[in-house]
Image (tube, rainbow, N blue to C red; front, side, top):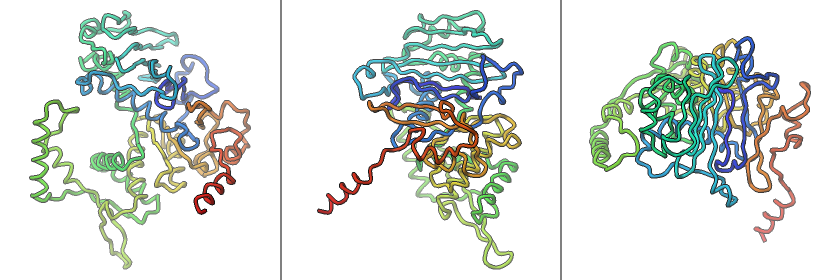
Length: 440
């Protein structure tokens, strides 16, 4: 599970921002009873005004995971490392960016991070805490493999792999690509157990295609149908089938595929044409009851509402996160979802009976009813975070736990009153001046 994420000098985040999923009442390097679920929160909800940096925080976490996934493979053709510094002051554009996470794997806490710029990786480190005390596994202090230092606690062909290291590649990525057993397990957890749902149509469609494959498991299909029924969408069942593709479409795809293979340096591995065609054939149809008793109709995905698609695209990934104890990060949770459905999704992660694996949900939202007034959410002070912009245009991240609050406080009302900041400063008189000025 995820304990903490730190980032600095990434887009609107200039100074170090730290999102913690460790309960404020916990202190120490590890729980005395080894119960990390009890020591951490299941949810982190991030609220704030438009353009305050909520999405930038999740984008930074996603960037870190993409770097770990691709720096030693598909990013290999790049002459520079992707670099997104804070651009509203000259100094930040000359400094490195920082990315670091704390997480638990097989009951052991790890800290992994790196500093980077366009020229490559300037620092990289991995620590573990098997007994509660910090143990260095490796540290990197420069762009080359000669700047790597390993400790005896990290078993494997470390020096051989270090000789393969490029300035723009992370050692963790290079080691995993070289079948390093210990580091491969860490790489696997970071890249496969933190999943994202972005508020874009392309991303939503990709999640639907992924859900279509996952739902070939009868148990998951049954659960997904239950989610749709719960949402009161008028859906009584789902049918997974395949359709034949038009010959003209197949010929066009073959032509595009052959042109892609002829390109000099594709930016990513190209899937086979057979796999592409197989995915395009897979369809989801939804069963609806008709007006007459016993009558039913099947509707395609394109005939369903955007709310149905949004709920399915989030609900199935949430089911899988609960099953495997994963971290799910959702940008704009309330987009296309009724507040009660958004609250229900949050409640799934907070319910220990539904979430025995300790899965975690990180989300951004403008829906203030999720601050505890919507039934099923009941967010604690440790689970509520805010972002706001400073006078210099830099994102500041802070927790409700930093304020003196009482369990009886109405967090939604106090937030809207500006007690915690992170709300837009709106002047009705200024708006009147702008609108009336345009009319004159």
